[in-house]
Length: 195
Image (cartoon, rainbow, N blue to C red; front, side):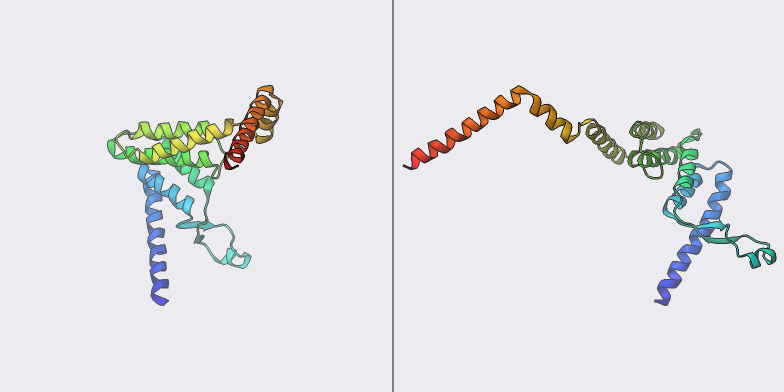
């Protein structure tokens, strides 16, 4: 149990140091660092500055207190958006800008931290494909298929409206009468065949 706690503390400390380096690198416009900071905020990794300092500690403590970062979807959205809007200045940036666009598309498609917006999700998926055309396209194709299914299901009328429309159509009643007549004939044929 003690070794497991040390291992968790070691990972946490490593993520905290990495977060600080990502912050410094992101200030200089590094796409990878900006993307990783978005991941840190999305998954609740790393540290944040605590704004809740006890009143007696406030006067005696000159430093900010750091605490574990909770999941912050607004912050992750801001980091992903900043990464997705970066101008690609080299091939090394393409996968990071594409992944940030993909993450934004995912968040808008399923309404994670934002209001669900399917056309905007489709636009971000398109930006992801444009940003890195040589990348693995399978996840993007799967998400675009799910998005097309969501568009289709959004356009399907409600069951009550569908039932009301079908029940008001005379052709449906005639078809139903024919199906009932055929079923009656099939049952009667079996009865006479057994006799």
